[in-house]
Image 1 (spheres, rainbow, N blue to C red):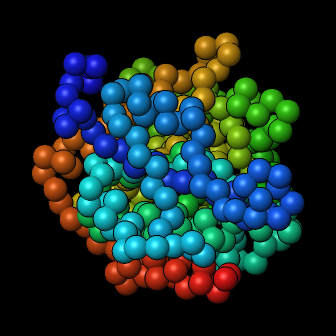
Image 2: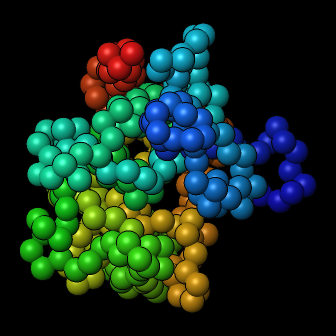
Length: 293
């Protein structure tokens, strides 16, 4: 999408918010809840000419007005689910094995509500890192709370010192959409910035890439016929660049997602709620935040 495209024709892509919860000890924005985006992922989406709109959580102690996530899902052409904090194990029916793995329950409820709203509108959804994990949980899958602890033979998937310059190889599954996006590249190098990962895959999804050699799912996509909207996700961060230039090219992934968004704009196909009860996630989110007041 070139710079010559008028604003009205550009795709409008939602980006889920990260949360920094109210902290009385913080010197800036003391005791205020912050919602924000990491700039690399916004710039990644914008690199193809799309407009990026953060989708703020509409509920909380300062909420006013009648804007809902449904309004954003109706207005925007698709959404990218951001990386960030751990997923709370309670979101997939488990008890945290360590306090360090408690995750962020409020953000889980918000993210589930975002996925639900965009799925109900049949709008494309792309997940990155935590986004992949959250999508898997939203549609009935489970996670390893800690890969190195729970997955026999696991290699290191997160290095706090190297962070986004920590890499491993993944094997792309032949015959998948991801394989068609990267022809002739059966094994590629990606970054690895996570310690949780998919344990049981959500029904209706296929695994498109596995980590090598320990076989942790690294990319998923909803199977054709199991829903009307496009849903795909990667465990790696395509928006982060390797200093060496050795990482998998992010462009085909982004263009594939944006092509689905353009198609959904031209031919809207409303979907259904992944949680089986329409708007259930948003009601749970509102109830949880009301209890915090």
